[in-house]
Length: 312
Image (tube, rainbow, N blue to C red):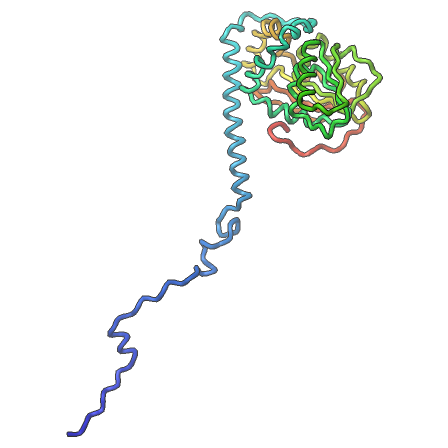
C-alpha cells in the first residue's frame, strides 16, 4: 500500500499547544523607571545634602523649643524657690570681695545654671570673635578659655577686680596653653586700666551687671580700642517678656547680695548711653541673654561676617 506523506505541523501550532512559556525577568530595570530616578532629581528622591539640611533644621527647632522650656522653668524656679519677695532695687557696689569668696566654688555653682541654659554655645561664638591683641574684662574664673581660637590671638590680657578670680583664670590658662608666652593677668577694676596699650578686641561675658557704673566702663573701654577694634559682649539683663522681667526685678536684690550681679539691667540702654555703635545685636532666652558686637564712633568697620549658629 502506498505510504502517505506526514502532515506538516507549524512551530506556531506547537507553541500554542504547549502553552506560552514565561519570559525571564530582565537583568536590569528600565532606565526610565521612576524608581531609578537619581536622588534629588525631578523623580522625587532626596539628596544626602537635603536630608542633612532637614535633620539640622529639625534639631535646631527641637533644641530651641526645649531650651525655651528649660529657661522658662529656670526663671520660674528662681522665683518660687525663695527669691520672689517685694521689689527692692539692687544697688551698685564694689563686688571684688564677694567674688573673692566665691572664686573656688564659682564654676561648680554657675556651671549648673549655664549647662541648664546651654550657654556654652554662646560663649563659644563670642570667644571666636577674639582676634589680635585681646583684652577680656570681668574674666572671672576663665570660663571662655576653652573656646578661644588661640592661633588668632596675638596677645591676651585677663582683667578682673577679684584677685582670687584672676588666679583661677591664670591656673586654667597655663594648664591649657603652657607654651603661650603673651598672656597677662591683672587684678584691677576695668575703669582703672591705663590707656597706654590698645586692643583689637575687648571681650566681656556676663560682667556689665557687676560694675558699679557700667556706662562709664564702656566709655573707658572705647579709649582702649585700636582704630577698627571691636567690643564683644555676652550679657544677661532685662528680657522681652513682662512676666520674666517681674521675676528678675523681684529677685534682683537677693541675687546681687549672693552673686554680686544685677541681672535686671537694660543692656541695650547701657550700650547706647556709652556712645558705642552697635554692629550686631541678638537676644535669646526670652530676651534676657544679649549678644552685642560694637565699635567706637567714627571707626570704619569691615563688612559683616557670615551668620553664625544659634546667635546671629
